[in-house]
Image: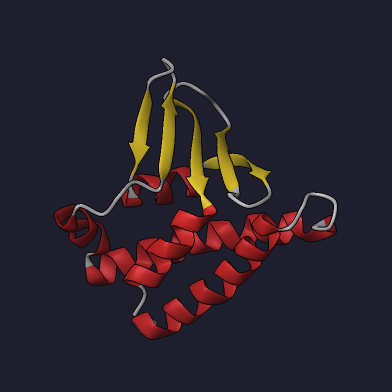
Amino acid sequence: MHRPEEIARIIRRNLQVVLTFGYQSAVTSGGMEVEADHALAEIASDLRLLDDMLGLAERLKDSGYPPLGIVVQADGERLDLHFRDMTNKVMHAGRFDWTHGDSPVVHCIPNGKDRWRSAELGLTALGELCAHVLP
């Protein structure tokens, strides 16, 4: 398996793509959406790898790390989106809807809405998380 530092390097590269896309206007971001979608999915997958190697979810939970966004459950209940659930929602999303601008958000939309309707992930929160946990 790869070393955590190598995985972190890949996450940082993909984070640049995601943040660049998110902070640009929808007009200037052009054809970057497919690349940003792929980079976001890869970030989630790689964060899960690091979690398995380094116990990130437990460390974040124990330290009281703030939520990264909101999950809207099937019944409409809104819950905090924490690290492990964020990686799950991104990895299992059927599509991503992006809100660009000064406070960009990616909305993870599932294929079926039996258990959850959407997850809203703030890109600033994602960047701060990566700065906090990456080796």
